Amino acid sequence: MLNQLRGKRQLHGLGFSLCLLCSACGSDISRDGRVESETTTAVTTTSTVPPTTSTSSTTTTIAFSRDRPIGEQVAGNRVIMIGDSVLASSAERHHGEMCDAVVPLGWQVEVDAEQTRYIEFATLVLDQRLEAGWDVALIILGNNYKGDIAFYTSELTTILQRLSPRPIVLLTVSEPGFTGRVDEVNAALRAAARSFENVVLIDWSAATAENPSFLNDEVHPSIRGRAAFVALVAAALGPAPLQPGACLETEFDYDGRRPLPATTEPPPATDTTTP
Image (cartoon, rainbow, N blue to C red; front, side, top):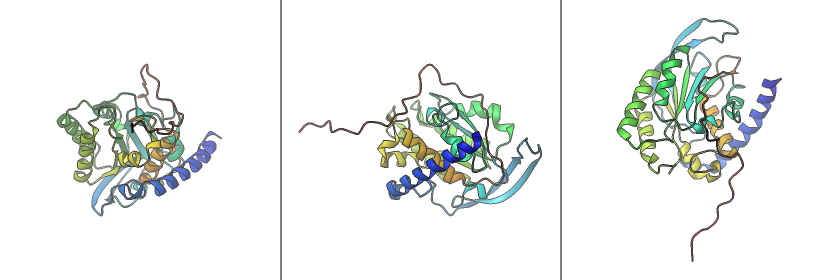
């Protein structure tokens, strides 16, 4: 019954946000939020079949293309998502939009996301979870930035190397953010997407710039923003090659003492300029 309700919520929210994005985002972001490229590369995916059916694994080598949904190009349906409070806001323990969007598509998704996490959080997660068997990875880390672009780029490169050759979804972060320097983070993310042919880039920065109502503050998504966020992810993934989908448990669910921002829509912008 829970899965049926989740599927109904997903269809409504996903359809709304996709229509919203198609009409509002314009040419700065592609229809499904992915980098437009005709580059293909060989990707070897190792899939662990859901434990409810079997514990066997299959390995398939295919040519990866950014112009096709990831689900058409992998053998399994397990996705690990690593991020900060932006991703955490859509996790099952908060509002649940991510699982609502991708589980009905057949994906078994683990959302490892915590508040106030920096790029090195991905290393912590991968040290514990990489060997669990994943077909796809997603990372959004950069909203919390220490101002050292050399360190950020080095960490990002190492993380992508560890996750390769499986497909990886990277998301840019909203500008100007809390630090006012995340433009260099986004530059590093875009450069990484050009360097790693198995990386798909979702330009969340462009989406939020085109649609200020997607944010409650400089970083955290509103209700409408979360719907758009998970719709872009679901479009990049597409239907999984296997069923069933599942919202997997995570040990990375610490949100600290500060609650996540309010979930109400932001008030309309007012003109604060003087004549």
